[in-house]
Image (cartoon, rainbow, N blue to C red; front, side, top):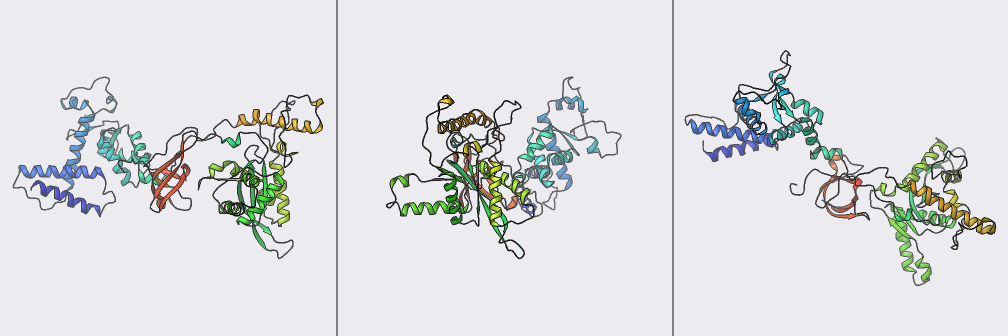
Length: 511
């Protein structure tokens, strides 16, 4: 049998094997089969009269090739192998002494162990010794991981120990499991960069609701009228949260259209004053409102004075599918639902009754303490968002600093202003200090890098249908940490945050 014929036989066997085994890409099987064909070629060259009727391997040939590979791996991994071949004793400090090593009939190192009196098979009582750092052991673990339908580290190690005893096998089993692309895709583990710093809008003192975040809660079923035969309709809650004081304003809206959102915004401005910045997610109502206000300003910029145009509201939208970027208003939604579910129960209120209930919930939420309650009875009243809301006019003039002035020399209006400034002093000393800690994402375990192969997490799809993509652009924050990236997929380039990006354990060079 000529060399090129043997090589063609290997290729043809690979093709046939491709259709009958799900592990056709296993380098472990390819290695063993290639060595088996090489051994067959050597036997044919030594004995020309040997006639082999088939190109397929027999079980005996496969076992001989596997034994030779194991023997070579043991010779490369353990210096004690030469001592055992020469029938010499192992050194006293050898780590293999605890295994009671011996050589079998094929000169393969096996564990002596303490199971001689058991009824287990020979491979179970005397497993083959392997080193986890050797390439053959790694190929064996990857093959068994796929053969066992992507088993976990515990099952993988237990199965391999039926015939082999890998030194450091537990760590290798974990590495094999965590580096499996299919297991990573099913698990959907996202990157976890360091928790970001607080935005500047949350740390600057000023009037409440100058910078707000907006979100919707619902739907809630509301009755069209009282009595029998009423019709139920869906209503929603627009939640405005102040960035600085965490004060909450609730507005009941009839649907999710931009017009209803604009009317809720006008009611909010009329009662709380016009905000400078409004932050929200990429909801259609918010984007539609932004587009309508932009069209209005552009169409009437000549009729409106420059002062009115320059005092417009700045809209800001967080990246798509990133609710944790708006954690402040998401917490407001959670608090509102907490009280609303306990008040309503299974009853359905009318629109006016539901609006009254929301106003009472708003008063409760604005009375919650911002700082922990002290055990000192002489301590001040706990600071609440209501301290910054009560007594604040919608249009206020700037006032001088009155915190160090004597109270008896001030007028009634100045005393109120001094009290308001005192609240801001307590806010900067007590409340801001509580924001110093990072409650989660305390250490950056992984980073989003260019050309990284990732899976885009979709909440409404199973993991196997998540889109594959490659990062083509990154957007670091003010602290230099990347939390948002542009990903090229089969349908185009999309932008997602780290909470929807699952990096795969494949480098850009090997992908």
